[in-house]
Amino acid sequence: GQYNSLYTDNNLTVGQSIPFPSTIIRQFQLGAEQILGAEQFLKVQQNSLVYEVRSAYYHLLYLEAQSKLLVAQDSLYENFFRVASARFRTGESTLLERTSAESQWLEIKNQVRVNASDIAIAENQLRVLLQIDERVHASEVLHKRQFALLSDTALSQNPEIQWWAQQVKISAASHKVERSKIMPDLMVGGFVQSLTGVQNINGIDTFFPSSRKFTGFQFGLSIPLWIRPQIARARSAAIQEKIASTNANHFYVVLRGTFEQGLQETAKNNASLAYFEESALVNAALLLDQAMKSFQKGEIEYFEYLQALRQSFGIRS
Image 1 (tube, rainbow, N blue to C red):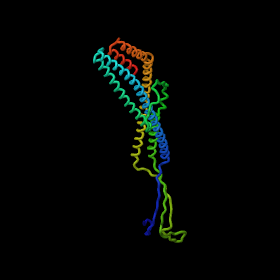
Image 2: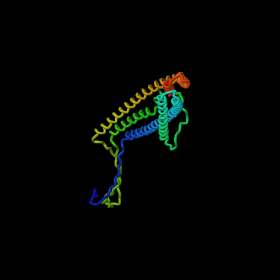
Image 3: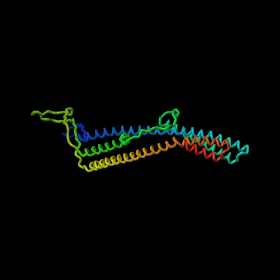
């Protein structure tokens, strides 16, 4: 354009706004904290997946063990039905006994089918979690597990607690970034242009065409005239930092409570398991054996035998 004379000149200006040095440092620190947060979140997801796989696997072991118990029940109730049918044909028992025996047998057979379906569902769930196409089978037998009692220091190693702690650091770094943005930006740039016309150089008039270029640079500060919105954003970031800290403390309190509850549940279940191992299972086996012998000898009625079967398998279950 004609910014210097009637001649048409051209100008090319390149400028760059650069945040204040403290802002750049704060943004770099925020980026580093966000990377650590992403890495910690990955650990949380990995830990969650491990938990889901373990839970699905042990649930499958439980269903397999339950299947063996149901098959044993099915065999006994089938035998009971055959005996009741034979006694009914010879007139030694009533139709009620035969029908009751058949009902119990059919009920167990239905439970066997339902449990088989549950096993198929559990296998498919485990296959999905492992992301494999072939069918999954439980390779071991459900057995009593020994747990090492953890201390409170184990809570600090929980990946999700560490992730929440990192969120506090990210919020604090974000707050510092917003506060540093209150500082003015730096402006740097340069230009190249033509100044077509006559210039007096050392007392001599010299004509400069448009092909002759003149250069220069620019430097300055970009000071916001309306700073209150940025101050409000900095205050908002401060509130977010407090929220992150409160959430982290809340999660720790909840996890600690869950952890202590888990210790109490473990102690309760260990005591219950000791009772079954030391006396209940022994009595259940004795009850089943004596009931079978007494029923075969005709010493007890069918309803007493059924009650003994249910009690024995209920304890084993």
